[in-house]
Image (cartoon, rainbow, N blue to C red; front, side, top):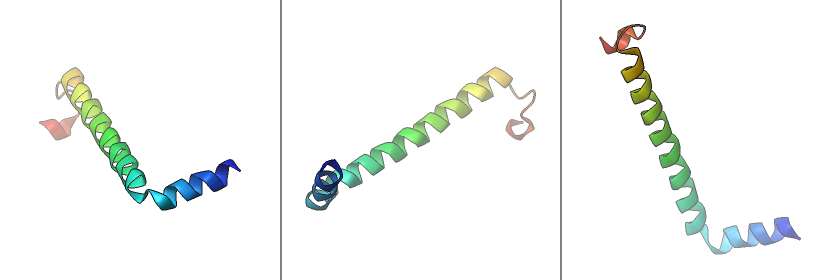
Length: 52
């Protein structure tokens, strides 16, 4: 059973799940950061009053 093997793997190697979670979190944060930087550079403070 595929689900059972996945659950067993998760129980045997909790570090792998932690690494995957941290990697996903970092990926999301970096994506948001790049998105914000691109928007700031494109808008140039025109529509985004928060950036001065």
